[in-house]
Structure formats: structure tokens, C-alpha cells
Length: 410
Ligand SMILES: Cc1ncc(COP(=O)(O)O)c(C=O)c1O
Image (tube, rainbow, N blue to C red):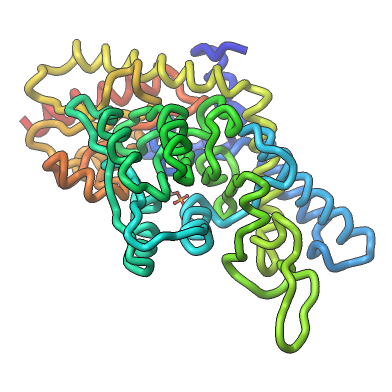
């Protein structure tokens, strides 16, 4: 179903947090790229599990443990369905960061002197693990150039992918700029050159229709808390045959099939990658979030967020002078519902705290993308990011906040 302003306002009612006020004003939550709010359905799923079905999984022969095991295992399928994954292609992790760390510790083959290719707009989560791997294995790091308009230079990507690239790991949507990267094209180029292709979908899996088979990637990482789910749970998608070949990331209980004093045999995928007692309630909560998103329709979520962005950009251009604002966004056609900006003479943190006084939650800072901020020549930006429960009223409050901040600082 198409999302409209009325529908978004209706959806807001599913989220109990929107009943509270911040500084005596209705909560205007625009920090969805950092984390999203939770609908009652997700809260209830977690509560129900603890109240009625809680036990540790995989170990008990008793009914309660079997019920918990079934719910937790089924949760993998529900989450996989959202991104078009096949059976046993989803391993739960703590978050996208852990999923990428898992890969940087386990993928093979790694050839000394070959390149790990990223982009200039990566979140630290898709940068630092690869820096570590490059150091350890004597590999090189390279970055697909970002153009002046905040989109990637695909000609540069083509050249760099042809230059002994072993691993391509790219964000689908930049958390700092909103730029939607053409991952299908990049993955296609990577495959042509025999590289492994990884997609950081932390900002895309929550916000639109994704199909890993259509994209053709080998791996994909995302976090539950950015898609209406609980914190402490995320997912790694991997092509089954690759997950089968990989060594485990962490070892211990649950990830083994048999152990002697001297050695151990690994369990099947995904258990091989889920050592120790996992975040069982988290997995169940994330499955409920995936179901909620499916019911709304991922295409309608991305379309609505684009509309909100377009509306905001138009309002900004009529509310503020061009010289008063610097936008770090490729325009609504190439962007998800994320808008980074700076107001002349106002520090991003000051702007964010002024907005807070008005009940508006935005983020000010480097957005875990320090190299990108350096490239842009700024210490940070103020960022508003939309989700399915935001309305044009939220966008208008944000723009009014910008106007007020400008007047106050003048
Ligand atoms: C593009 C991108 N990748 C990775 C991450 C890391 O997510 P998490 O902190 O949930 O592991 C984020 C978080 O903001 C992100 O925006």
C-alpha cells in the first residue's frame, strides 16, 4: 500500500514512544539513520517470548526449549525473506559491524598485494575492519572516488575493480549523505573481475525493497535496531556455498557438532557462525520487525521517504538563503531519506541541541565517517533522517527549526 501523510500518521500510533513529549512538545524523531523506534508489535513479541516461551535453545529436550528453538530458527527465515535470501543463508550477529568483522576475519582466499576496494563514503564499520585485514595480510586498500555531486564515480570504480581487486565492500546507502549507490552495477563489475562482493545494507535493508539474488552480491550486512528491531541483533547474508566453505569467526558452544579434547567439528550454517547463547529474544523481535516491514511494503517505504526528502529540500530552498546553508546530498533522485547539512556559522552540535529544545531529534557530528568529513572539509554535519512514521509535519518542524536557529545565531 502506498504510504501517504495520513498513513504515516496512522503508523506513528503503532509506536508507543510517540505518546511522550520532549521538552513539552510532541516528539519529532529524525535520527532514524542512527536507530529507529520500535512498534508495539515488536515490543510485544519480545515480551511474549520472555513471559511465555523463554528457555535456552538447541539444548533442551523439554517443550519450552523446543518452542524457543523453533521461534529463533524461524526468525532467520523471516529476516532472510525481507532481502530475498535462500534457506540457511542468514546468520545472526550483534549488528552490521559484527557481520563485517566476521567477514574480515573469515573470508578466503586472500592474496598478498591484492586490493580491498571500498568507497570514499564508508561508515567506519565498513572501513576499519578492512584496514585491519589489509595490514594483517599485506593487502592494499583503495577507494572508489566520490564526485562533487556526492555520487560515486563509476568509471573510477570500473578501473579500480580491474586492478587486482580481491574484495569489494560498499555501502548501499551512505548514512552521512543519503546517496544511493548502484550496488547492482558495482557487484556486476566485481564479479566480472573475480572479486568477492559485499554490500553494507545497514541503511538500505530497513528502507526499501532489496533482493540479494538480483544484486548478485556474495554477502550483505545489516542491523536490527535500524529496522524497528531490538538492539544487539543484526544479520549477515552469505551465499550458502561460501558460508559452507568459511571457517567460523568465534568458537565455543553451539557452533560445534562434535568435540574431543584435541579438536572440534563445526556445526551446520548458520549455527557455525553463532557461537554461544545468542540473543534469542532479539532474533524473535527482529523477525517481527521484518514482518511489520513486509506488511507495509518496502517499496512504499522508500518512496515515502524520498517524498519527505523532496518536500524538505523544497521547503529549505524557500525558507533559507542559499548562502546560509550547505547541503551534503545528491538530490532526491539519487538519495534516500537522509539529509546532511550545515548552517553558516552554526556548529552542527549546537544546531542539534537547539533542535532538541524544540522536541526535534537530529544528529550532529561526523556520523562515523571521519575520512568523508575530512574530504568534505568539515568537522561534521547536522543530519535529519526519515522513516515510515515521519510526516510532512515532522519535516516542516525541522525546516522551521533551521530557520529559527539561523535567526537566533544572527
Ligand atoms: C552505512 C552503515 N554501515 C554500518 C553501520 C554500523 O551499524 P551498527 O552500529 O548497527 O553495527 C552503520 C550505522 O550507522 C551505517 O550507517
